[in-house]
Length: 191
Image (cartoon, rainbow, N blue to C red; front, top):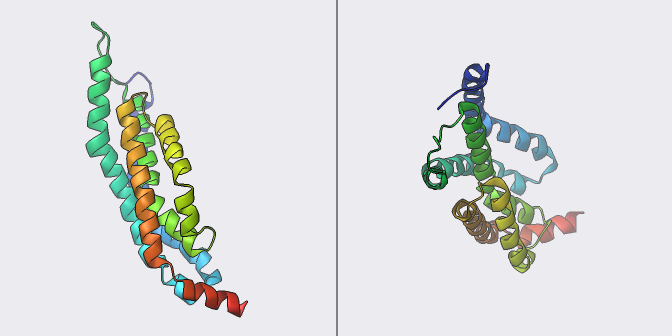
């Protein structure tokens, strides 16, 4: 790698440190966000806080690991293979880190889809039937997101879109397990 920016050799370690700090602090930050919302929730809804915080943290880290161990090798191999003859492909450390952080965040957020689906169903904002009904739109949206947040090759787009679609399906299955229509009826009767 090369450094073409004067302060790049200083900023890159700082950005890496911030990313590591973010990953380490993520469970605490998510817990604080849930603790802020918790007083407005019923007791049976508050029981979901700890499992969802743990699941959110683990899924974000799994998404980052997926990007690092599976996506990066494919992307870099592809980019090296399409470099024109006679061109030395040397990556600037600042641009590499920017690309890596964007990819990590994109895959980390993508892997949060099951948690989002479960929360939406439990909050009563959307039904499982509606989630099944909008499945074709989610698939198209997954490929659009894959095209936006990955390099311009089809393989890396697929490596983001396919897990997004699969995680959406996992979210629907998990939401069905966590969905309790009796609690919803009881909540409506107390209002």
